[in-house]
Image 1 (cartoon, rainbow, N blue to C red):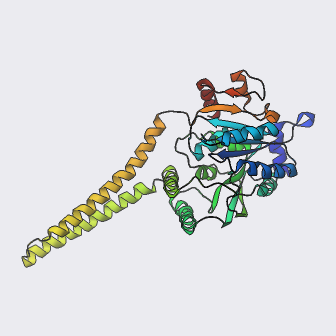
Image 2: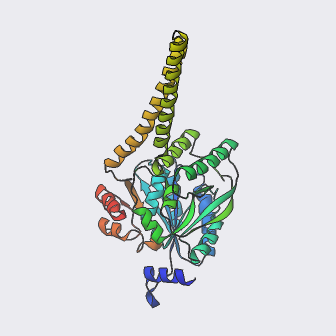
Image 3: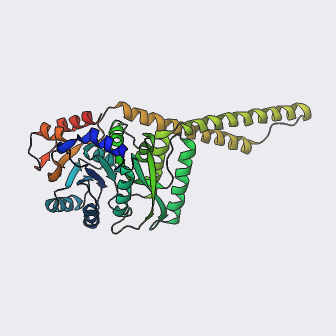
Length: 366
């Protein structure tokens, strides 16, 4: 490791004989992925055997209704590095990812999807960049196998529109697949907004970042849980979370429409006064009224999106509720020690989490 990382790790871990090696946490949100988790664990285990650091794998079950949770329990029985968080219902991937970051105890945290479209083997390159002093190392896709032309086109447009609309330097063609240092994770944990666009937050926190380019593969099994409607809502979350651009666009359109209406009025009055032409055109009048009404409704809709998000933020509800926690047995001393103390349980013991524990977790994350 270079001097930068040695200093950072010394501050985190201590020095001398009492210093433990840095821990790598792998956060994996899952929802109805029983066909995939076994394949993922097999490849991830091979990868973790090749790196020089101890590791934990934090699976976050986002209210799965199939056999995903049972499959995770079976894996945990054979691998003490696995921790499983069970959310009380389906909160969505962005919230599940946030829950995983809240509970990851590593000095570096890797975020990866379970579908194996992002190859775990790239993590070795992430770690090398982290050792070189980078705080965020993100995967940048150069090829996207298994995706339709429409999805590729919309993704291409989305990233470029976001870069134009926001002041956040959102890297193009990137997903959640990345490695983050502990100070980046702690910074993200301080961001508690209800409507979360994690790709934007990853970029917003700043610090030293770099890309590792890779070939994105097809799914090994199962089907994607994102349809085009969900992708549209996801894009809307990203835009409204990081820019007031739509409000400005509505303002500009309003000014331009008013200007056109004013000059049209001057033209009508002048034509009537100079030539004596009567004002005609019921159809054209209706077209103008409907056009203006449409613009007004769109503008009200844009305002409503922002007002609705403000309403959600003022409720003060926790981001998520935990139903169950199964910590990694080999990392119990590191994984959420204040939660273990609050629950009064022994390392490795399953425990249902009540509302007080959930509240304590959210206070700790703030």
